[in-house]
Length: 407
Image 1 (cartoon, rainbow, N blue to C red):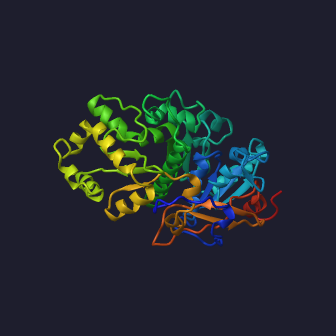
Image 2: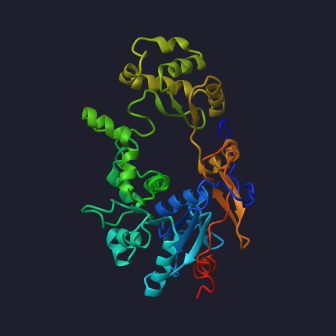
C-alpha cells in the first residue's frame, strides 16, 4: 500500500474475476513443446504463452509436473505452486519413455518452433531428447535447455535446485543480517530469473530465425542467471578486491539506503543522490542538516553512515508510518512500506496494472492468478486458459496430430 495504512487480508474470491480472452498475440502462430517441470522451465513457457505462443506442456501420465505435488496448500486438488506458472498452456499426458510414446513426441516436436527441456545432457541423451536427435527432426528447431550448470563442462550432469544455485552464485552469502547466518532469497529467485532468461533467449532466437532461417541452441543455467543477478556486487570486488558482506536491510554502497522503524510499522528509505538527500531533510523540517560538513557527497555520507543513520532513526521513530509515507511522496523522496503478502494483494495500483485476478477454468474451477507484469499499449494482459488439469488436452492435441483418433 502506498498510503502507509495497514492492509486487511482478503480472500481469493475478492479478487476481480477476469473473463478469458485472446490476450497478447505477439507470438501468435509459434508452437512450443514444453518438456519441463517444477518452476524455472514452466515460468519460461508461461511468459511465452502469455505473449501468445501455443504451449503444449507434455507431462508424465503418472503424476505429471513435479510441482503438481508441491503442497499444501492445494486448491480444488491442484497445488498453487503449479498454478502460479502454468496458465495459458495445454497439458498433454504422454509416456515418452516407451517407443510408441517417443514416436508420438518426436512427431509433435516436428510441428514445433521451440522445444524447452530442463533435463541434464545425460538424461536427454537417454530419452532421445538431446540436441542432435531433435535438430535432426527439424533443422530450424530452437532448442532451449535449462539446467543447473549448463549443457557442457564437468558439472553438466549435476542435479540442481533453486536453493543450490543460490548458494553457488554468492547471493546467499550477501543476504541476511550482518553477523548472522546466510539467507536464501524469499522466493525461488534463481528459478524465476533462469525462466526469464530462457524466454528472452527463445524470443531472440525466433527473431534471428526469421532473418536467417536457422535454429539455435539456447543454453541457460540457474547458477549463471543467479550469478549475473549479483553483478552489482561482483563488479566492485573485481575492481577493488573488497569482498561484499551481509548488511541486512541497508545497502553497502549507497548512503542512506535501508529500512527504518517508525512509531509503528517500518519503512524503507532510499537517498540515492545528493538531490534526494537534500529533499529528505527539507521534508522533515531540518534543511540545514543536508549542508553539514562531511555530508555533501555519498562518499562522505558513507564515512559517517552510523552517525547519520542514528539521527534519521531517531526522527522517524517520532511519528507513525502513515505520517511519513505521504510526506515523502509529496517531497518526491523514495520511501515505502515493508508489505506482507496479504498487504501486497490489496495494493490498488497493482490491481490497476492487472497483477491480481481470478479466472474460471473449463471445468468450472475458479483459480487466482498473478498477472504477466508487462503492459503493452496501456492494456494489461488477459488470460486465455487457466492452468490445465493433467492431460486435459491430450485427446485434442493428438487428434490434431493424427488427423483422427488419438489412440
